[in-house]
Length: 332
Image 1 (tube, rainbow, N blue to C red):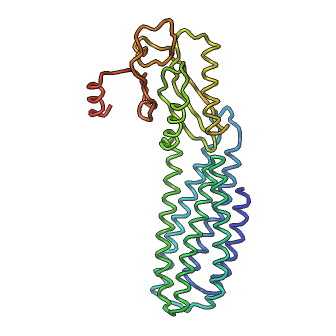
Image 2: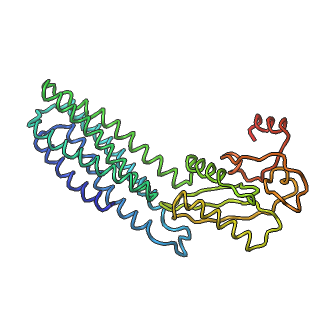
Image 3: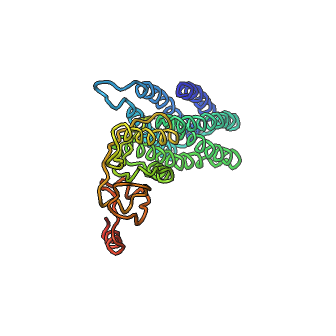
């Protein structure tokens, strides 16, 4: 998919250059400069996907997936730079205004690029979400933003065409330069979050709720859950508390069920590190296992797994209501 993004970006770049040559409009130049970034970013994204697809090796035991985050960081930086260049060109146009020519033909060419960008961007985002690719999603969002900014520029060009107010050309450029810079910031922000292994709270909430709804009676507790993204690969590690009397084969079977359950919901590109803990006497009161011959305390309540208690590095236990409220008020 990224090959098509890169190739189409090159074609659309030359179409927009032709539109600028015909019109001499700074607003059209704004669009062309953003397309320059599309071309560069498209090829950077293509190379990053090639690197990210490499299997893990001795030097990179977790694979090469973070190359996609670096690619997105470069793309975001380039988008911001393009926005700053556009601001400079718009200011120069205020100082040294010029005549705009053949706006009608320029509008047709720019509108064509907007339609193509939107179609390619939508498909790129779809494929990126499906495959968990940060680079494809970044490229798709960039193309869609290019579409929106192009649509706004077309509106501005139409107004200029009818009103003959040439000063609007620079004003339109400044407006969309701000939009472009904000888009670059968002891409850069997400890429840095990936590089720094920032927790994906939406993904974690989904996973915790899914596991809570499919709990088995032998799963006494789940805690210290962490999910790290490496490009399209998810690395999941957690502590799973099981009845202490299970043998290795039985415990491993429970882990297999857990991993199969997560893969069914979140895809096959997942690696796991599941640490098993033996249940403790104090957990009898929250254990839902029936007919347990070694139970020391009667069952009292089921602890629902939530994002807060599953990501914590502490085994679940039942506490008195007053104590629980105090802990909540104190931020525990």
